[in-house]
Image 1 (cartoon, rainbow, N blue to C red):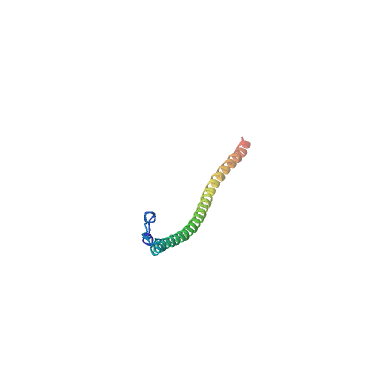
Image 2 (image 1 turned 90 degrees about the vertical axis):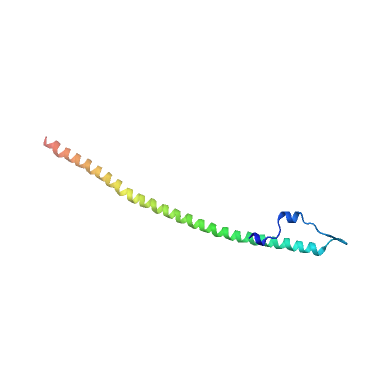
Length: 112
């Protein structure tokens, strides 16, 4: 990209024109201004290209964020699915043990 740029800030600032009969040489000034215009065109093209790249990257980022959220949601649902039956089975087992203990109390408590 730098090869497209002909002038630096110092080149523009330090440019000296030769003095002609009626002032500066119009041909020399026109050539210099043509070079400045070419650089401005190159800057505009670079800005447009970088803007397009930025838009593409922003779309990619949005797409990747959506995929990440989807993956996190799937991971959470898997975690909930995996943890829920085990915790339910533990709760169910505890409930069953409590019921058996109550039934044993009822059965054996009445015999005594």
